[in-house]
Length: 160
Image (cartoon, rainbow, N blue to C red):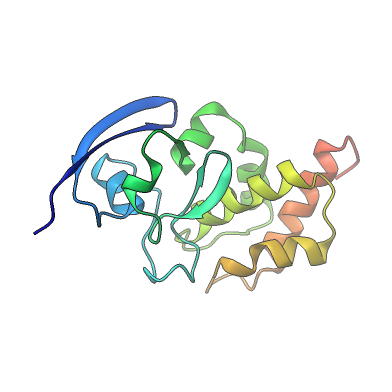
């Protein structure tokens, strides 16, 4: 058995201090805190369901250890929703039927949020490329790309 480690992480603007096992994943840490929007799918970093943002960059919560985030800022789908930064994306996903079962949606939204922050006018190929690490078994991706493209145009002041 390993020795537990004291960590402090700013999660969605709230400081959380815990003593954790060194091998505890960030996803498991967040879910234990009641932030269940961070989903666990493959637990190998492949499906993207556990995508969160650590200091503004996307990270796989299943591969990132909680202790690696000591002193850092973590934003989950709950935090992005609460601050309203992705409301237009959420609305576009609904409008375009870009979600069905919803399991992948939080990770998709966190990834797309990063994309649009870094590249406000991505091409359809750039959207697809950025989402290539997020698996969706329900939608076929076309509607997801349509939703992201619409939001990019809207944010740029263009027509829908």
